[in-house]
Length: 258
Length: 306
Image: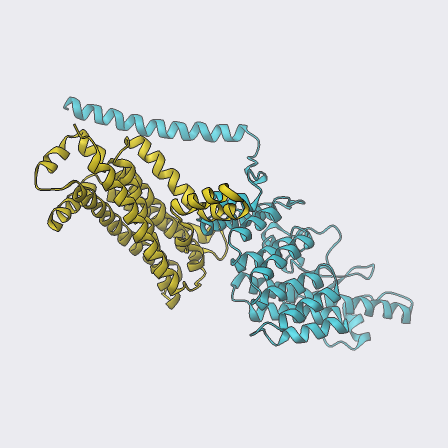
């Protein structure tokens, strides 16, 4: 049973590589090397800060775009090409298909992030000429970015399981933006009363909260990240991704594929 | 030549020619238009809105706004601009996006506080910026030092300067000279002595090469200002004693018991005009000197830097 999931995951990864998804690494490398060389000449004191901020922001944004635009097509493309029927005619359950797709896409993003992380550290070495202990904090920020990807992958799959690619992209991107404002939503809930308070609080907990995952700025200033936050974020990402994935499985199990 | 190869060659040639032509036309069009005024415009001026719109990537946005502030100041400074309307808002946005960006406070103050042509001449804005920095980084004694520096150098407010140095001296790990500076402010001791102490402290404690060079230039200028002051007083004394002006600096030096010909820190002798004014031989070498400058003197643009 797990074998089917692994097969689908590895096929999804291979397909993404075949679709030249990893070509974004070239754009990333150009962006970082350009910034590392140029910024020192047009600004003051921020070479290292820019490399960390730009590097991690690019890792995050490139990954979010990949997660959304590949994630939304994972199910619909298979239906369109009619390959889904071939897959499901074998001893593969629908939930295995969804879970396999999720792990395939997550694997693609992890590999992508790994290469980008090498780029970030290389650019950092170029501007600082040496690594210091606090540079290890960048790994924590990268880990949080990967956790963010898990949530977005699961959401993209959830929308892909019942909607068209275009609408899925709109939904997923909107949720990403709303997720960045989740703290504000919670603060807003605190200012309301009665039923609206319940509704807004419910909405604030329903949408993903990406605020806690963003430690780029503090890491750039070498401020330590609490171990508790790492643990809480890990659990939150796993639970939220599991929730979205379960939703995708529930919908896809009932979907009429004829 | 196959038809496919022919198409490839023609298309490649077209691509290159079109690229060159479009660049040329754009360049010509740029010359027809007035100087772009993008740096004069802040489409979004609210730091809060910009922070929200950055979707959490506020660190990168802060770097972008900081670079914009540096470019804005550098461009206007280089061109002897009299107004720097966007500088304070740009620095405010930068520091609201990333309140831990210490160098934005330090450099920002040195852009905002000094009077033109060395800065924007907005010491109040510099003080607001520094207070925001202290509020967000209360453990950084250098911010208190910079605040006291602005109060002393630009506003000559010894009480506020003393308060800033005193508050900074209480920060754990603060440099011992903060206490000395606080005491100095309370005593109102000699301007040159205090200014020299402040710039020496800046030189000793800064890690940044540009700030160090800036401090050295100020220390050299202070020495010139002090020399010119003393020599001018000597000319007055000579006049009161003899009823005439000294014929030369050598005569003045001999009358005052000064050994050799008085010279600037580079070893170039000062010169004296027939009206008895002491001037620098090469004022261009002392961009921050306020005394000994020929009438109507304007520093060359190469000195228009930090």
